[in-house]
Structures are given as structure tokens and as C-alpha cells.
Image (cartoon, rainbow, N blue to C red; front, side, top):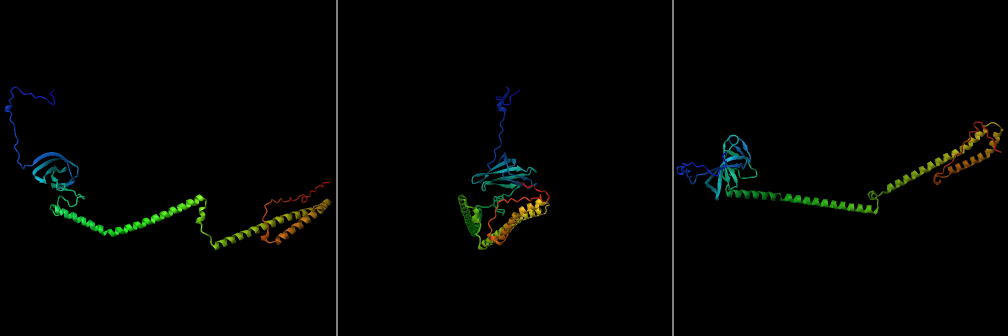
Length: 317
């Protein structure tokens, strides 16, 4: 098997180099364009005028690059490219534009609108003519003047807005200072042990003080009335016990029962008299002069039910 990349070639014995002719291509004229096949990407988005197909920026094409020696701008060479539509294979031609640092479509397609490029619609000024340097300078001066006029028009509005912002900032600063001072007072009062609620409660008026005093007097009078009623009930219970014992002794049968009643009668009479006197004295006194109530436990005397049942007690000698 022969080598792919040979270093030497075979020449037969009868080889005559003089018989091998040298072909030369005809020389091109000076103004003849030079054509070269290149691989490029679309520098802008475009739409085919034949079929309406959109071709976006960055799409790769096999193009023919044409260089014309007579087409230059300030000694900068202008190149022309020939590509074909990806759908209908129609020829599209565009060239470089060193004047505007851009590209210009010549045939077969229409360039999509670029909003960020004002006044450059396929290299014309809107009337189908190329925009000159003077026209471009006039347009830029006019745009600058319009922007300056709008700034002067909005100067008063901006001044009013700044004034309102300054007032708002001052109000916010005052509110912040007030909050800080209040927090400092609260911290100081808390550290000293002062009740914070006392400062929040408003001062009582004279009418409120008078109303509170009357309520306290009414409550004191009611308390004393209830104390007097309880004392009366206690005295009635003490008085009723001897009466029931006396009735039980009188209703019993037999002689010894009479002697028992005679022995108990003087004590019962004395107790009754003392209770009646105490009740009369208590009723005659004013409720306001009563002593404070006593919570001492009172032991009630047990009732003797033996006499009611007819049981006779034996006398202890």
C-alpha cells in the first residue's frame, strides 16, 4: 500500500520535462473586481423580499466577497457580499458602510428596523437621499435644543418636587427625634422603678373625687347595716335557747322535774334580762358608733332534748 503523503515521486525513464507545457491564466484588468468565497454570519436581521423569509443576525452563510479597487471611502476599502435566501435561494447583496460604521443592503432583502439607530434607515434621511454631514449635524443640534427646552420647562416642577421632598424629610426627622426622646424617658423611668402607668392616667377632676367619696360612704353605711343585722340575729339565737329549755322543763311529768325547773329558773331569768338589756342598748345606739366587728368564734349551747322525750336525769349527790 502506498503512502498517503509521499516524499518522492516516480518519474519513468522516458520522461521529458520539456514536453510538459505551463499554462498561464490571463491577467485581469486593473478595474476588474476580485471575487473570493468566504464563510460569514449575517451582520444584521433582514427579510427576503421574494418570499418574506426572516433571517436573523448571526445566521451563517457561504458568501462571495467582491472587492472593487475603485470603491473606497477615505482610503478604506468597501467590500460587497453575495448570499442566498435560505428558503427561496434568491440572491441578496449587501456591502460595508465605513462612513456610518455599518452595513447597507443593496438588493434582495430589506433590513429590519433598529430603534437605537435614528436617522439611519438604509443610509438615507427619510426622503430617499443620503444624509450628509451637515444634515446630521443639524439634526443633532435640533435634538439637543429640544432636550434643553424640555429641561427648562420642567425646572419649576423639579423645584417644587424638591421643596416637597425637603419638607417631608424634615417632618420625618422631627418625628424620629420625638420617638427617640420618648424612648429615652421611658428607659429612665423604668430604671428608677417608677410606674409607667401613672404618667399615662389623666388627673381626676373634682367631680370624680366627689363621686368616689360618696360611693365609699355608701359602701361603709351598707357594711355597718349588715354588721348590725348579723349582731341582731346572734342575740336572738342566744335568747331563744333559754326559752326552749324552760318550755321543755315545764312540760315534763313528775315531782323532781318541778324542782329542776325551780333550780334553773333564776339563771334563765337572769340570762333573759341581760340579753334584753343588751338588745335594747344596741338598738338605741347609732349605727355609726358601733365598734368594729369581731371575728371571734361563738360557741352555741346545746339544746337539752331529754326533757322533751320524758327522760329523767339522775341527780348527782
